[in-house]
Structure formats: C-alpha cells, structure tokens
Length: 336
Ligand code: CP
Ligand code: NVA
Image 1: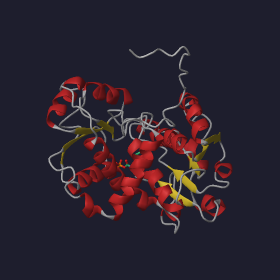
Image 2: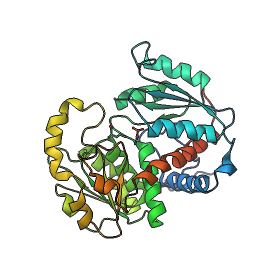
Image 3: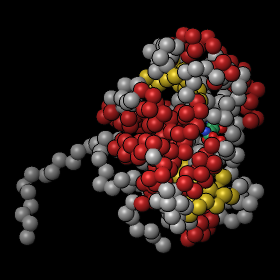
Image 4: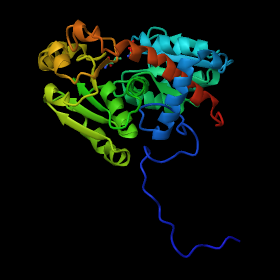
C-alpha cells in the first residue's frame, strides 16, 4: 500500500493560460479561446507555419473526415477558408445556411447537435447568441468550433496572432492598439493577448468600452503571461508605441437597428490617414474584414503599404487547417 504523505500537497493555483496541458487541445470544443492553453496556441502557430510553407506535406491528412458548417449569418472568409482547408487536408464539408437549418426553429438545438455528431467529425457554427452555441456544444459529441457568435470570434484571433507573429517574429510584448467597438472580435483578441503575453491598448467611445467581466477574468492570465491591457477613449493615445493598429466594423451583424446611433458615436474613432500618419513608422494595420470602407477604416489605410489585412485574411486558411488537424487527430474517445 502506498504510504500517505503526512504533509498535505499544496495545490497550485495556475491559470489555464499558463498550465501545460496533458493533452493538446484538451477541451472538447473551441468556443471562445478561454478554454485554450497558451502552449496549445504556440503548437497551433508552429503547425500553421509548416502548413503554410509546405501544404503538400499535409495533403490527405484528414481523409475520410467530415466537417459540418452550420451558419446563421453570412460569411466569406470563415466559410471558404474552412471548406478549402478541409478539401486540402483530404476531408469534406457540408454547408448549411440559415434557410435550410434555422437553428432552434425546425427542430431543437440539442437534436440537431446530436444528429450532426452521428454524421460528422466536427461542426463549425456561426450563431447570434453565444448561449445557443454553448447549448449546441453541450449536446454535440464531436468538437464544436465557434465560427463567430455575438460574443466571440476565436478563429479570427488565431489568424490575427499568427499574422502578428509572422510580421514581428514574436508575440510577447508586441503592442496592439485596437480602435473601435468592444465586440466579438475584441473579446477573443483580449483572451488571445492575455495568453500570449502581448499588450493591448483599446480606444472606444464612452459607453462602448470592453466588458468588465472579461477584463476581470483576464487578470490572472495577464499576470502569468506578462500581458498588459489598457482602456482609454482617445485613439491617438492608444496608438502611441503601437506595432499593430487594429479595427473592426462599428455595426456588427445583428446590430443593424443601432446603425445611425453607432455611426455618430464612433465617428472620432475612424482609422484613417491621420491615425496612420501618427502611428509608429514600423506599425502595421489590421482589420478582420468585411470592412465598411469610409466608416471604421478608410481606403487609404486598407491600401496602405503597411496594411496586413489581406495576409490576415489568408492566414484564416492556414490557422484553421492547423486547428482542424489538432482537433481531429488528437487521441480522445468519441462519446455516443
Ligand atoms: N472575418 C470574418 O469572419 O469574415 P466572414 O464574416 O466573411 O467569415
Ligand atoms: N464584428 C463583426 C465581425 C465580422 C467578421 C460582426 O460580428 O459582424
């Protein structure tokens, strides 16, 4: 019999960002980036880098695997990069739009989740409510990937961080200025930055600042990784020392009724020639796309020689291929 130690073992309180997981991508799903470890992100970036440089090496690696794409909102990048990525890896995709599969209308979310799990090896969902996505994931027995919800866009963040890592060789201590709405793209970027130890300086109009609960939730992870997050209401303050200037739309999908009000409130936060000329000379400009040219960003910045926007869009393909490969080849049992 094993002798019990007289001393109680001290349980170490370590955040999910710092702890080295026993299994790669140990969480079943990829919903927000909260569930992902910092070391998983590094593994994903290294694999995406290999896949980008030598795609032929990975041809057919997911042969026989099927991915369902269940989308309640329009998409170009997310849909096409998953479909093409899966094809390049030898698997196949089934795409369902809101007309043929209105989530929770024709039948319950839990039934759709269970049925798709019997046919497919993973599901990418694009929803309005994040709770609907979590419900779906709860009943799906296969990995569920968030292809954007009203709250998070983690697939965007992995491509964004990968792009920044490509441009600057590292993520630690890279200063990212995010100008604009505290939306799904920013929420996932916040989690990503906290895990990799970059710095994020956010400038939003009053009343549109980042979610307090998320900022609170990130405190321990920031302490572990050395990440620094700052919030202000002045875009020119946020871009001081920035390596990256990032923006996203002022009116996200589902917020169309608030359009007029938002256009007024966000006007001083446009990423334009004035911002570009004040940003450090080696900084890059990013936008997740689709862009509303002339609203949150001007043509001049999108077409700027230091714009990384289309590299960022391309990297959706490489990072999602790496994500699919890691999720679909890990050693876990498929529950019924
Ligand atoms: N960035 C992004 O997710 O684009 P789509 O909405 O076109 O998928
Ligand atoms: N915040 C935007 C991102 C689109 C990719 C939206 O939700 O519409």
